[in-house]
Amino acid sequence: MVTMVERTLKLTLLFIIWLQLFYPADLKATEADKGWVELETRYTIIRYKSIDILKQFHASIHYGRGWWAATSSFALLTDDDNKKIATMKTDAIFERVQEILDMRKKNEKVIINLYPDKKTIEIAYAKFYGQECRFRAWYEYKTNTISLNINDCHEGMLAHELAHSIIDHFLKVRPPKNTAEILARYVDTHLK
Image (cartoon, rainbow, N blue to C red; front, top):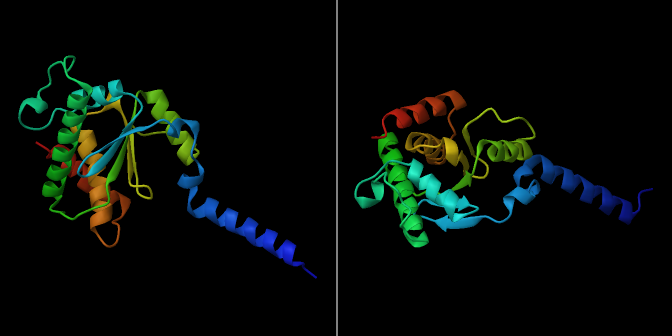
């Protein structure tokens, strides 16, 4: 005969196993996930560990109109200026991706994690997925998160990953991976 305590323990254990199977991202938080600074834009939440990472991110993105689209040195800008430029560039690309795809719909904000180098992004991928990283950047549907290596980033890559989020959240049924990849590549090549 099973006691009430044994039954409760079994149910608790089953619940923990269920959580690990269906919500792995929530349970795999690591030290690398701590210490993020968040910059909220109209369409995204940009997460970075230092202002230098954010500066390098927006310096690698050559997109937009006006003074903030310039590719010259940003050494004389204040931290607030750097945040404003990163916000304007990211939102301009997001809007252009929606326009190219003709998929304009209010979406949940996309999280963009900025990693300082290839090694750091590979470690984050391995911790999240439990396998070696084969990608330069990636998008995770469950968390609506894009991960970018700022040393290997450009406006086309950002647009490509944003396209994955927009496509997945616009359609009622997510398209097959190959179809979504074709659309994201189309966006990447038609961004200008």
